Amino acid sequence: MKMLFFSSERSEVEVLRKAFDEVGISCEIHDSGVIAGLSLRPPEAELWIHHERDSYRAVMLCVELGLGFAKRPPLPEDLAA
Image (cartoon, rainbow, N blue to C red; front, side):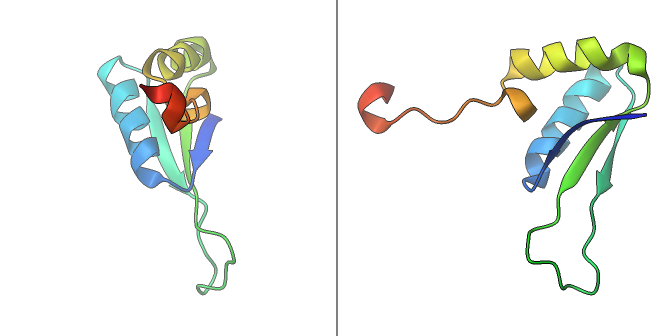
């Protein structure tokens, strides 16, 4: 298995997991966990792919969807229009 992406925004990780499932990339989500609720940072969800051979396809899907590590920052308001 190989960790491809992690985020404190679990919903983003869930979207990628669903997209990977739809194209046949076997994956799972792991939670970083918080010990006794004492963490100073939010827990992170990690997206792991099961097979190394799917790495390239997974990366290209992230780029195509603009999600995960390929997510672009929002444009400033004066450039968005």
